[in-house]
Length: 362
Image (cartoon, rainbow, N blue to C red; front, side, top):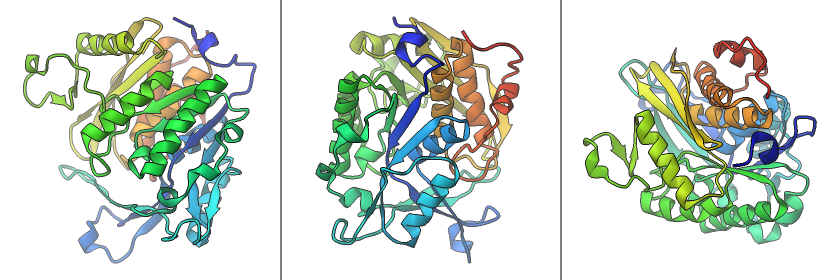
């Protein structure tokens, strides 16, 4: 098993990160209102891959985002928000009506939960610019040139056949260039079936170095061993250390190319208070993080904050337990920030939450 310095760039070498996906317009009724009660909406922007680019840029990583948005005020506003957070947007395509006939930006509505009432997301992203664009016009070899890390998710391929081809071709191009690839399964039942997600995401695994969001993979060998309610799509929702270690080892047995596998586990005490911990397989061992309990201001993007925290800690060559604790602490802090992304720009704030008052470098 390769160690951190062989998997990633040395700390003295600049890490250059790029991710590919859709950025959406987010509309949220204020003051925890339901949509049927709302007379106005708070506007912001988000999306899984964009959230990770934003989080890493705020932590000081050279971060680039590739997407397609309509060449209108809404699309330009989304790009302006990304740039204001130091995300590089040079590759972003501002599409014309001829390139994307419906010429619209995907959006979603968020009803923010409170107490015993959970949050609710309603998508409106069919026929968005990224789903209609012809990616045969994009030279992926040029797009990925010079980057050390590519992040992709299982959300983008669910949007259209064109997006599905884009993700698979990007994985192959990154593999040829020796770029470290992270992939978050990020299953969304409102976008495609579990079977479709499983089939596609499994095809991605041979090209992946760092795997997160393992829900789309049917790998648990005997569901009958577990009580009803503990399993979702073949994966225990709140596994013991022993269960998770076995699952990780089964992944490695099938896909020895994987260098790291991580997942977070959520305990929902109410719509306003949750706990998180995480498991990570790395360098032949399974690690379990601390348990973090916190109040929730905005839950959306918590998984993306976990992913960005994990990527950042791996790029900086943190020790194994510090990688997984930094990732969970990043997610916990995100829950206190309104909007989709963890825009924390003070690494010490995350480290303090971890009680890491010592040298975390190797």
